[in-house]
Image (tube, rainbow, N blue to C red; front, side, top):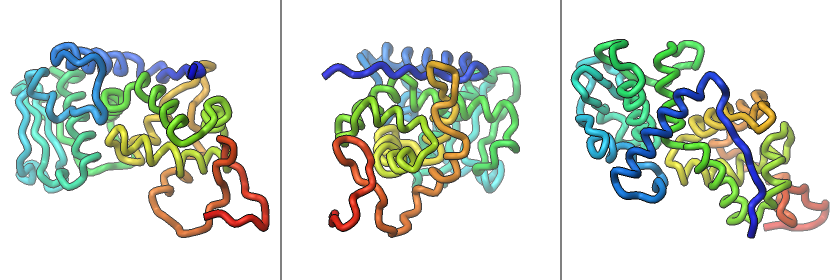
Length: 250
């Protein structure tokens, strides 16, 4: 089956970081003899080999009680707090975040400390850059496009109508994101719901417009909480539609 073209790009201010992440991922795959990156991308296993950076998991409370990870470019070392081991998505993102500091910010600071999540406006420039690197390394655009199409195939969603609907601010779009695409993509890439949503928020369509509407963010971020209400849509002929009244659905 032929797949329709889906052109995604990163916003202009993030392109250099996106390229650095892509180059790093390609270097890892080439060094390990991999034809393509596995999912989820095993960043924690690749930091030491093939990237050649010392890596450890330890108690970092001596730095600060809320530190999740630390990167020291001058010592060529990344340390991750034991406290994040219980959350696989947070652990992997923290590893990639610290890797971003190592590759992007040599000479900027002796030690970088990643603390508990803060609202985006309160995060300084270097931390935002490390976050962008982590998202790009763990969720490359080419693999996102591939998995969007694969998810359509697996879930019986029509390519053209379904993916086009994801770019709109409609109830159908919300339903597709919450019930079909986000559960699959977060599991496949090993990412948190919030990290996945914000990754899509920074992607642009071929015409330069945002792939995900800003006003959709709050609604989608609430999707992790099951409310127990009856679903208002069902996949009918490959597209989310409201069931006709009087018909029973399981």
